[in-house]
Length: 246
Image 1 (cartoon, rainbow, N blue to C red):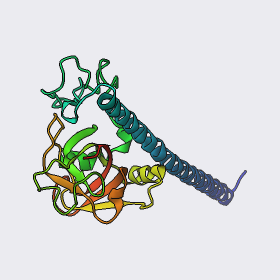
Image 2: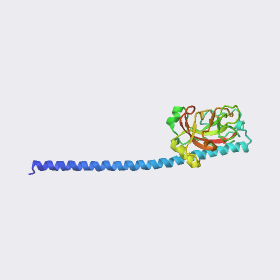
Image 3: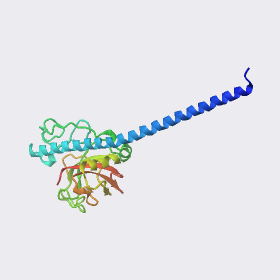
């Protein structure tokens, strides 16, 4: 017959073994979580490059469609239309009725309107600033060292020196850095303080409003920059490309 003392030792040994097994299980779970996190971090960096390439590639296609409409179809800059069935507000009353100057029409540029990659957007910042997740086509921003408008006066000089821009408002910081890397821009993070752009959509009219340019970054016709300080759109990171320099 077993003694009571022997039974207690057996129970204590069993409990100790249980604690050891629990400890091993927790250690394995910790290692798995760390490995998974590291792998996801690597994928996140790779994804940023892919998203940057998707944005810049689409911008190149839009640029090509605009140039084709102007050079081959004889469209004036004021006739270019970005009207599409997805985002309202781009109807250009001055565009020809045959739609040869409509970028998102088979009779014109033949482009399909696409939204920028959702994972590339800082949706929190965009929502707070009131910007939708979409490409913005604008004609009220002049870019320093691009075209004829000097940075100090072009935002308010009453002259037709604003550029036709494609902008992706509020990309996340990682994608912004990846865009500049893909473009091989020498300045790794471009910056612009004060007002940079608002949500005004191009409908055939260029107007004073905003200027991009702090330092030398605006020598780039395409890039991603950080807006800081006061003014629209607020603090954030934004892709831009010049479709037409003026």
